[in-house]
Amino acid sequence: MNLQQLKVFVLAVELQKLYLVAQKLEVTQPTVTFHLNKLQEELGVSLFHTKSYHVIKLTEAGRALYHYASQISALSLEAESLMDEHRGTGAGKLSIGSTHTPATYMLPALLEQLKRNYPKLAILLDVRPASFIMEKIKQYELDLGIISQTHVDDPDLIVHPLVRDELVLIFDPEHPLAQMDEITPGLLAMYPFVSHEEGSISRKLIDRWAEGNGIKLEVSLEVSGSEALKAAVRYRMGYGMIAEASIQSDLAEGKLKSRPIPNWVPERYIYAVRHRNKLVSPALRMFWQLLEKSFDA
Picture (cartoon, rainbow, N blue to C red):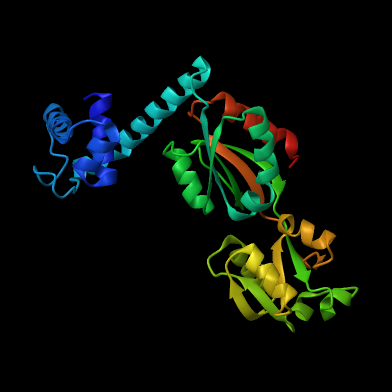
């Protein structure tokens, strides 16, 4: 079993067609077949249900091997890229996973600073849910993640809290609640509420808060995405609760007003996370240090 065989195996599983694997590796299709046959012969087990490879369907042994082979293949590519950086023959690449709020409102300025220091660096920003990002980091498919989460406890990950990700109340400036000196949970239950989509972390936190305060919110609209929620509030479809980081420009421009949520207990942080065993490239090291200096949790 060698590295080339594992790369062919991983690509066969992911691309599902041997001619696509051949194109990717710039080899002939019989060469791809040879590597797959040789790999199974050396391992002494069948990795696929068919010998023809017309249908790529893994056996139980094949699924078990893919778990490790995909990581080995990804680490191999990463090591090659890192050596290119040190030799000065490549620009390098940094793959970042981020949840919506930091990707939209925190990272652009930091990424601009990174590009000034590494102008030829290729940066991938993948905006996904926190669970997806952490899994990709553990599979060595992302270099690091910037995620909004209530708690991260995983022995495979290095976790650094950057800043609290507070939820606050937002109103159209003419909303009756925006004019009141004191806002109570009971008062909030009397007005239409623009809610995050069901299943989101924000929605879970808000539902838990409402239950803890013995109220039921009058949901007038349920939306996915901070910008859509803010737009609905500006068009007076109700008040909202949203991450404080997402409204700074709206407050400065007078488009929205904000107040603390009564009886709110902060639970959520924005974290920087990376794999404990991952090779640290110069670009990753610099960006991690930049994050540590820019935020004081």
